[in-house]
Length: 231
Image 1: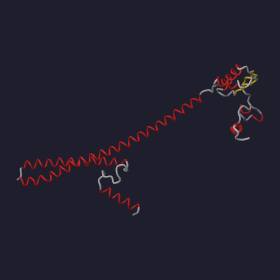
Image 2 (image 1 turned 90 degrees about the horizontal axis):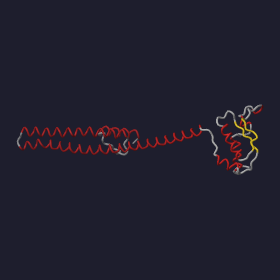
Image 3 (image 1 turned 90 degrees about the vertical axis):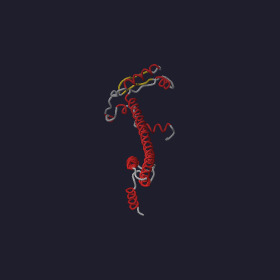
Image 4 (image 1 turned 180 degrees about the horizontal axis):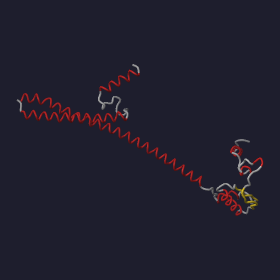
């Protein structure tokens, strides 16, 4: 049987069967199918309840008429059967609806949990981005203890402390470096902003023209050589 024919046969079966009947089972049904099945259970439950009420009313009428005993038994049989069918139908449909509602709640809870996890991850990402942005927005700072330990590895010497005039935190950073070097008995020969490059280097940033900032490629090659990656 082709796939198209199988779908057509399945559609005909669905038309002939009540919505609360799920051929593929509750677990494999879609959310829409479960919702339709639950609504169908409620509708059929109302029908069963109406059947019980109608059958009981018919029995009341039969009892009020007071027919002969034999006729009374024959008239009461259909109403008794209707009451039994109605009650059994209400109970079974109620149980069916409870299972459907349980499955719907389980899926809903799963979606809520998944949404909460996504929200938590998004919040964590936003917090990390905020922290990174805050750190990048703050001026650079030296750790005096670490810097002193570093410069103590070499004897005091002469040094120039130059900084980029346009840099927002370079002046403060240069001042901190100068103070720590002087505290370690270094001789600071110059402490001033970098001059703007001229001539062939006029197109370069001031720090790069002065040799204080190298290209990314050069820095990586120098690091790799230091680690023994290249010679």
